[in-house]
Image 1 (cartoon, one colour):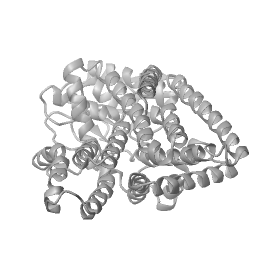
Image 2: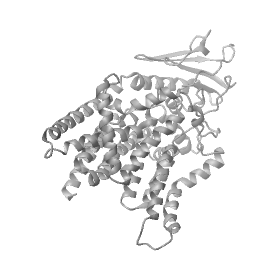
Image 3: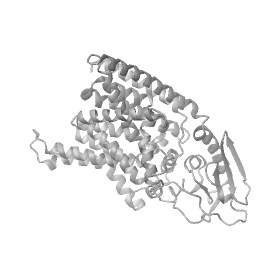
Image 4: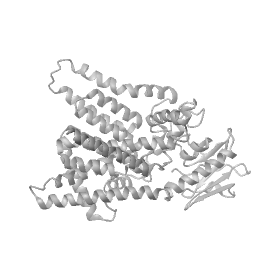
Length: 476
């Protein structure tokens, strides 16, 4: 790659990052604020806890919490969510750059450019998860793969360790990377040192970021396994989740009722996946990672309402689809009709992707799950901060935004950050109900406060009215 092209690409990626942040800076996903609440408490010297004094590992993203705690120390609690979105956008941009680096040499610039441009413009839905750890894990996995492909096993192992620290389900990738490393150790090498010695440095590099956390988690929580894993397990029937999994990738290109279009997309993605996997071990590793990640979640089967768990599957599926389309676009000389048609289709697809991504960002402020929910939860947090004392607890089904902005102690009805109970704990003074969850516990009570933004509503009930404590609400 010429120096001039490097500068041009660097400038393009920098401008893309700025545009991403400008569009998605207001995204505030409730689950991300679980990490931010842990980070805020950690930065304030309360420990790695959600509620002060309660040592329960309710975060599936310890590395994200540690990063957010460092940011919190530097910029304060008000700016933390926006800085973390900027970090998420940076990781989103990095994915596109890393894909170009991984694909350009073995497959050529058309497949590499198509995949990188598509991801940069949001074909994988990266913008909707910028406040979560999702983009960061994907960027670390791609960076680890590129390092391994460039013959730097220690760096690849260190990046893989950071990916697992950031989100433990990256272990599926680590297992595949280890197989690649074992195969490389068995291959002839000019280094005459024993295989165990050559493996020692990558093993130590992998353990360096992960080992201290594992030791701390065993001591503090009794296990590094987050309590959320058990709380989310088996919430969806196998057949329903399998169908959800199969639809997730193609849905980024066509509506679910467009059967012919979905079939063509699946065929194009399959061809792209075969091309990528056959281009070298890096491609085979990433295709296998997506398959393994999907199978792992088919076993776990959380609620299909939350889709960001499957981001690696969507990222690789969309990249494979664009690799396939980019491969057809290369055939301008051998098959002009196919080549020019593929280039036209690719141009239209990228334009449609850019428009869809920008449209998602523009509509976020007025959407039910976006700005409406955020506005209501901020109002609820203000009320709770003024009316709930430090010895009291508030029961919620969505604990992130409200707990972060109110700083009240909470009881999580879903059993993620606090233990699930058969009845409401005695110190719960208030319950927050929202429009999309049952309010059975509110029978016979009038709310003490009510808030609404668009179609999203929330009601606060005071349990200290003489009525019996209600049962916990259904899982979310």
